[in-house]
Image (cartoon, rainbow, N blue to C red; front, top):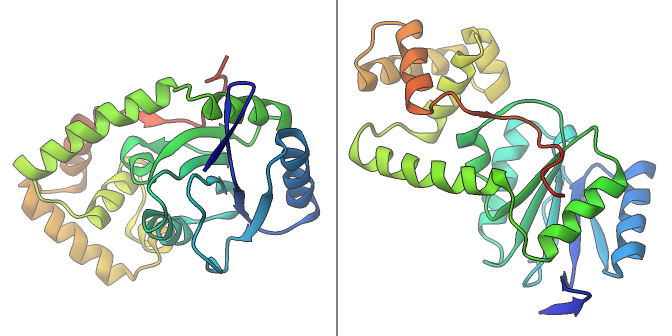
Length: 226
């Protein structure tokens, strides 16, 4: 399942989910040559041809994705092997904790400003079993969130997505475009959110969200691994 090499727990396969390009192929070749591990490029717009092998390491290119694809791939990866390790790279924006907590077995996040060498160092750290501040924060948040969901307010995942958009001042039109739904659907969700939270307007809903999520956005992580 895993090979041991200088303290690294090397996977049998590494998969990069991205848009095939000269740059992505060069990155795949760089990782394959440096780590001596087979690296497969998976087109982000196409489904997996087969189930991932046990212990696979998956690198997900956030720069070429969107919220719809994020949701699709979250669901796909949830059905894969339990010991999958996920790394997000090319992150260029803020991400709320609950958004990051959706990804299964997330091990690291790297910004679009990171060099190939820096990402490689992070991957090596992950393969050695090293953790990061981000992971401990996510674990703590997930435990608190799951408890709050069960004991307090039964908001759906979509409703949390809409609340997060509200935090950044998005209009109904903005939310509809970001989540690929109609404005009527947005209004329906907002009505249900206001009712569940017992609030009267967007401002009160945002205040509740900031208090509940403790206003902790996760930025693209740089310098996590030393």
